[in-house]
Each structure stands twice: as C-alpha cells, then as structure tokens.
Length: 368
Image 1 (cartoon, rainbow, N blue to C red):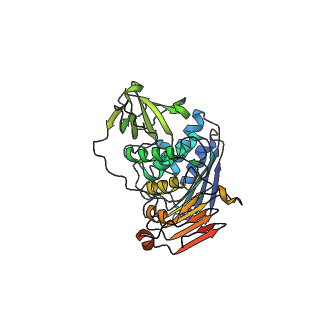
Image 2: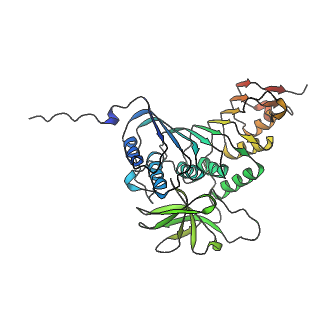
C-alpha cells in the first residue's frame, strides 16, 4: 500500500515577500517570530528593528535570540554563539535588515550580530541609523570587524554627526577589532584584547549606556566571544556577545581569557559594493574622506545625500580629487545638496574609472 505523499513545507513554496516589524521586544511572540522566519522560505525578507526604550532583560534576551537566529543563522534553541555553531542556511533569496529608531543598546546588539555573519549569509541590504551615542565605532565593528568575513552587498547609513573624535575611535576599532576600545593615554597600558571562552551556564551581565548594569542572563551553551581585559576592572571582563552587544562576566568558574598574539591578522572585510550616506552631518569635509578610507575597499557605487537646503553656504564641499583617492575603484556616484569641487587634476583623478555621476540640487566648482 502506497503512503500518501508528504505535503510540501513552507520552504518548498517560498512566498514572494515577507515583512516583519519588531517593536515590543519583551513580548514572548518575538521568539515565535524568530522560529517562524527561520523555517519560512521567501524570495525576499525585510526585518525592521524598532523600539526605543525597553532595556529589560526579557527584551534583550529576546532580541539576542532573534538576531542569533536570523542574522547569525543559529537555531533559536541554541542561544548565543557556540564554539562550533550549528548554523543553518536561511532559505531567503534576499534578506534586508533595517535598524532605525532603536535605542543605543539594541543598536549595539544588532552590530554585534552583523559582525558574526555566516559565510553564506543571505543578508543583502543593511540600513543603520547613526543618531545616538557612540554608534560610529559600533558601525565600524559591524562592517569591518568581528570574526566574520562576509561582505554585505548594500549598506545605507542615516543621520548622526561624524566628528574627528569619531573617526579616531573608528581607526582604533579597526586596529583592535573591538567596538569600544580603550584609547591610549599613556596611563593605562596593561589592558589586553582577545577572546574569552565561556562555559555553559555562566551568568553574564548586560551593559547599557556607560556600562550601566541592566540585568543578567545565563549562557545556554559554551561559546567564544571577543573580549577586553582591563586590570582596573578587577576580576571583571568585557565581552562582545553576538546579538546581545556589550556584556560583562567574572573571570571565574571556567571563564578563560585568551589574549591576542602580538601580531594579529589584518582585517579581511570592508564595504566594497554599494554604500549610501544620507542626512549625515560632517564636522569637516575631511571626515567624510577619512571615514570612506577606513570602512570601504574597492567600493563601486556611492550615494551621498544631504537634506535639501536652499542656503548653499551651509553645505560642505566634496572634493572629487580627494574622493578619487579614498575610493579609487568607484564607478557610480550620486550627490544631492552638496557643493562639488575639483581641487586639482592629477593622476588619481585621471585614472578614476567613474562611469556615471548624478547631481541633484548640487553646485559644481571646477578650476579653469
């Protein structure tokens, strides 16, 4: 007697587009959403992360589990990153993540997950809002740091102000592979960067803004995370937990810190395909070029949009010659509401392979 054919699963019948908005992170339905999205096939999935103020342990645990499942590709039941994670392939054609209108803690949690993307990630588009405290350093860590070598094809960053201090910290982040590094001041040279091995059942403390303790959670499985050991913190160690952001633990009960070797390997990932920058204020035009030189390599398409303002005197100048040095492989360039200048015609500009330049509400000033 023949058995009835097995009905097709959701992944056998992928939907065209699936959109999910998460606002109340403390709601238990967040875990159901994570489990459902992980097994649902779709040609395109848009995950919008929202919610500004809920820092409760329940909210942060739910956020961590969802980010681990959908961004890091780990089963919800496994919790945070394992030493050898049992990852699975999300059956998405395209996966877009939008992190706009979130509190600083959720922003850092998202960045910590993005820094650990699996090699075969379906993540194709990432939107990040930079209006908040200390977000530029975490953005640099997400895009260019962590253990992942996966490159996101399209990145958009919105809002915020980029200062000289931000650029300096971003440079240290990329050198140390740590999102909240200790800036060298000659008074504390005993801190060390490395990894920490955390046994199953270890209690970790969530860290909010300014390292404020906002609750605890228990590690469900053995894991290895990026860490910073500062002797001035006594027996405490700062840890970057994928999907949970900055946490702390005591160096006890099998928690083991392994410092980096003196010569650490260089970073292997940067933004290299498409970058959009919208409504970001720059302390000086140099900050834009310095940021591009830090987080991009081989960038092909760049869009820079300022808020439309009829007052030209408030706009910064973007020098195409400097841009040709910061992004020497650029092919497609779009400006809105900037003053575009050419300070000099030299070899980098002559070799620049740009094919298309779009100018919207933009003044161009070239030397004669």
